[in-house]
Each structure stands twice: as structure tokens, then as C-alpha cells.
Image (cartoon, rainbow, N blue to C red; front, side, top):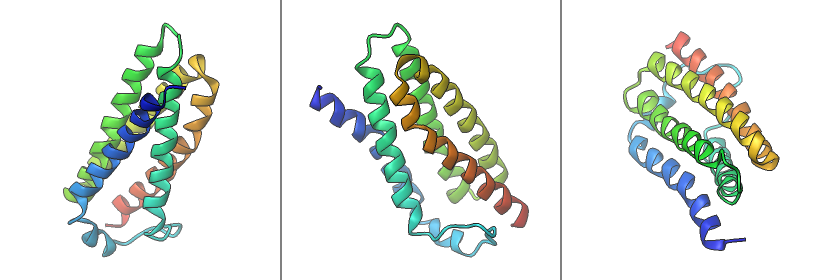
Length: 152
């Protein structure tokens, strides 16, 4: 195990998520006034869930980095792409309050994560499984985003 590589792989998604959160911090108060759907979780749950998901993403990327697969580069490009899309979604949702465009970005994110998972599965099954909860959370985020779009 290469500890420096592991730490870097864990830090990258945490820093991406942290920067995104920093950039939207002034817009979150506006979000509280929205009409939210029935199954909306409490606000304190979101940072906990996202921190866990980012750590799982980082660990899975480490497993891919450490692999000897010829598809490793492709998988890491897909991983980076989905992380970039993940970074942009809150900017459109919170800062621009463009719920429709945020919904479209979320669809692109879901598709890219599915493609990433498909690629990860061929390289390292653990890396695949570590991201299933991320995909499930994205489907839940889609529901929340869609309902907020309809109700606001």
C-alpha cells in the first residue's frame, strides 16, 4: 500500500467537494426558503453523506490507480470527469438557482457515474461496489432536484 497515494486519492474528492461548498455558502440560506419535497432529509445530513461519499470515491480511485489494468487511464479520466460535473452541479443549483439546468447537469452526472462504474467493474470489483451508494444518492438527488424544480 502506498500511503501517500492513498492520502492524495482521498483528498482530491474532499477538496473538490469542499471548494464547491465554499463557493455556494452564501446561497444556501436562500435554499431554506424553497418548497421542498415530502422526503427531504434534514439539512445536517447532507455534509455527512457527501463526506462519506467523497471518501468512498477517493478509496475507489486509489484501487484503480494501484491496478495494473490497461483501462486504468480511461477509468481515471471518467472518474475525473464525473468529479468535475459533481463540482458544477451545486453552482447551478444554489448560486444560479437554475433548477432546470441543474437537473440536466445531474442527468449527465448520473450517466457519467454509470459509465465510470461499468469501467471500474472490469478493473476492480471493490472500486465498483464502493461507488454504488454514490449512484443511489445521485438518484435521490435527482428526485429532490426534480421536485424542487416543479414546486418552485
